[in-house]
Length: 121
Image 1 (tube, helix red, strand yellow):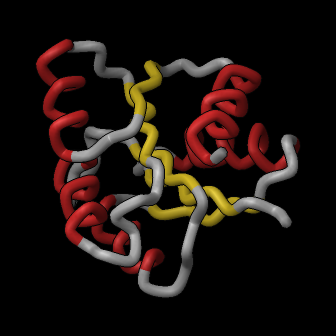
Image 2 (cartoon, rainbow, N blue to C red):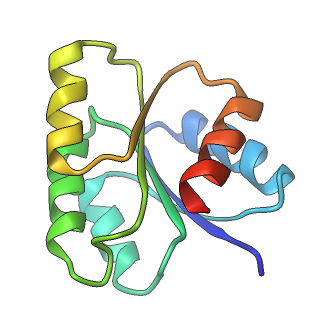
């Protein structure tokens, strides 16, 4: 069965790079442009893994992660943060909100796929 990945990032370029890497690795990809859009997508999708940025308009990654964790249907879905941020306090805040892992941009496609397979297992 093909696994579905939800990518949440306000950068079209980043969404395109993620789609290219993930579709090439055999995943189905659905996209959202910010946290609010991500929550709307989750109303009709059950992704196996969520990848989210932190710095986004309308609803940032922290708020998005908290909202996903508050939803019983998605509480257990792994969430990987993919961001330019490397601040330990922000990593701790994301972990406290419910993030499963943290990857700093720019990302290595092979390592990203390995991380997804590890958390989706």
